[in-house]
Length: 301
Image (cartoon, rainbow, N blue to C red; front, side, top):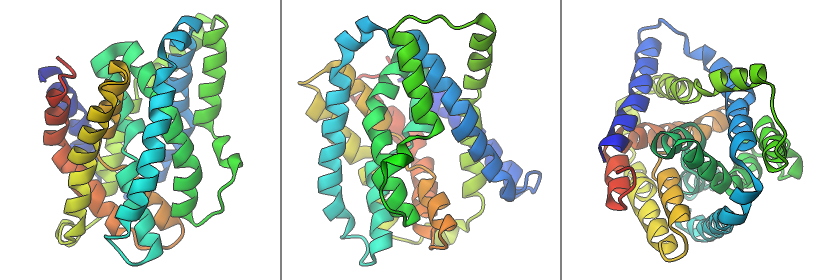
């Protein structure tokens, strides 16, 4: 519990710094796309490749294939059930999509992965990334296309994160050695993932009026489902199946709502207040709920 609480405080300290820098105008919020681009195209891919190339061995695959099975089952079940639940929160189809995405997809990449690494080291991070593969598949196909009003195509899967995951898996599975210079580059870039992602979160949330966002009653119900109900149900469902899968799933699904429900609506000229309200409220409450949920399952010591 102490370890988890410490990591939550560290991550959210960077979010507070990002919020302060944006509010005090020391950094312009128009610059957030730069940080987002660095995360998606450089830092996260480097982190993914480094982790997979070092740990995705034949032995690991034989011992942990259950992670993919469990994750695929979780995503399929959540997609079916929460598609109907989301309709209870809004009559408009696009807004339903935002609610549905927020319920299904936690901030598994920018917060879940750093948390998994902090708790379980390199093996914990690898477990999270393997478990996160079906989640990423949903994010970059159904989720991305719904939020950006685009047609679903498999071309969306050919992005820097997926490519680095595939290359890293090949290097790790076949034991291909990486030059030490490249290894150092990947390592230093990877160390930036948690701080930069949380700085970005704080900067994005700072753009909105808190009172207006927090006046939307539905965000409280969705946030409770996202932070407490869903991770606990998933944890209990996977407990008889596989302990590693259960712990990895709880870590990832205990994370707050991500920023895609702000970024993508903005790209297509849609109202992003719902997504912003969910991101704001869930990130504030996550400081308390993450240690409680993980502690409930005895994760983090």
